[in-house]
Picture 1 (cartoon, one colour):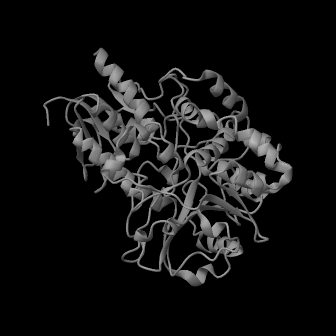
Picture 2 (cartoon, one colour):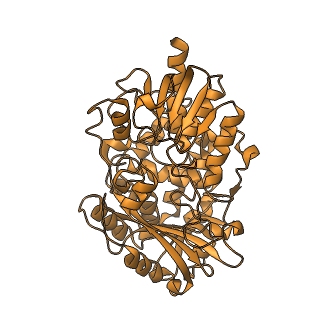
Picture 3 (tube, rainbow, N blue to C red):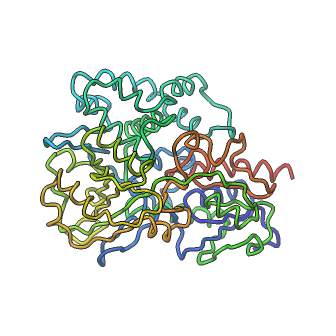
Length: 472
C-alpha cells in the first residue's frame, strides 16, 4: 500500500465498491475497508435456513442493477455477473385469482389492466422508452454531477413524476392498474402521497420494459463479488473484518469516502451534529424461506413472475404504508414484496426445492413478530403455502440493523425516502456528496439518487472526489 493513498472508502456495499472502481480506473490509488467478513452490504447471499439454500438477506431482484448507467460501463460479466430473467418481471395477484402484470412488453402490461386503462398506461410510459438510457442517466445524476444530456425529456419526466402518486393513480379508472402502480411506489417504503412518488413508480415500470427485473445467478452476492474482483484487477485493495471507529483508524489518504449512514459518518469523522435533522424511515420484517416446491399461487401469472407484489387493492397498500410510516404500528394485512429466485436459478436450492423471499413494512425499530400476518397474507393468494415451508429465517428491524449498520432502526433505504428527503438527500445542498470536512465524502444511498443496488450514488460521489483530487 502506498504511503499516501488517493482515496480510502469505508464500507464495501455496491456504492462503496463502485466509487472505488470509478476512481481506480482513472488511475487513483484506492483501498476499501469493510467491517463485515465479506463485501456486499445490501447485496449479499448466505445460507440462512438449511444447507444448500442460498438466500439474499436484503436485495434480491435488480431492475435498477441491470439498468444502472455505471454498471453498464463496467465489464462485470467478465467477473461472473450474469442476469437471469424470469418469464414475467412482476405480477400483482388479486383475491379472485386474476393478476395484473408488469411484463417486458408495454402492450402485455396494459392489457392486464383491462380495456379502460390500457391506453392510459401506454400514454404514460411509451413516450419515455425510446430515450430511456439517457433519461435514466440524467435522472440518476441529479442534482449537480452532470448537465442533462436531454433536458427536454428530463423536464417532461419531471412534470409527470414530481406530483404525488395519488394524483397519478387518479388517471386510472379501475383498481387493477392503481394497485400494481401503488405497489411499485411502495418499494421506497413511504406513503403514496409524497412528492415525486409518481417518478418512483414510473422508473420501476420503465426499467422493467427496458431490461426486465432480473436476479443475479448465484444470488445478489455475485454483483458485489464482480465489483470487488474488477476493483482488484484495477489495482484497488479490499480489506474485510476491519471496523472503522474514527478517521485515525484509516491509512493516510487525500480523500475519505463513506458508504455509511450520515450519522455514522458524522460520528467517525468528528462532524458533530452535521446530520442531526436527517430522518430514518420505516423498516421491514423479512422472512427467507426454504420451500419444498414452488409457491402455490392461485394466479398463474404469479407462478411465472420473479417478483410478486402481495397487497390486493391500492387502498390496502396505502393503508399498510401509512400504518408503518406514520401511525407507528405494524399493518395487518401487510403489503408484501416477494421474490422467487429459484424460478430461473436452480443453483440456489437443492434439486426440487426453492428459496423464497418476502418482507412487509413495519415501523422503524419495531420489536414485534410479523411472521403470522405475512403468512396469512401469502395464503390469501397462495392457499397451502405454509405446507411448502421447510424452514424460515426471520429478520425484524433489529436483525436488519445488525446485518448492515447502514440500516438504522432497520431502515433498508438508509434514510426515509419520503417528503423532500426523497429528492434532497442527505440535506438541502447542491453538493450532497461533500461534507463539512473538505476531504470527507458520503456515497451511500443516503445520497442521490437514493436506495437500490445501482452504484450511482458511488459513481456520483466518485465524480466529486476525482474533481477534488485533480484540483488539489
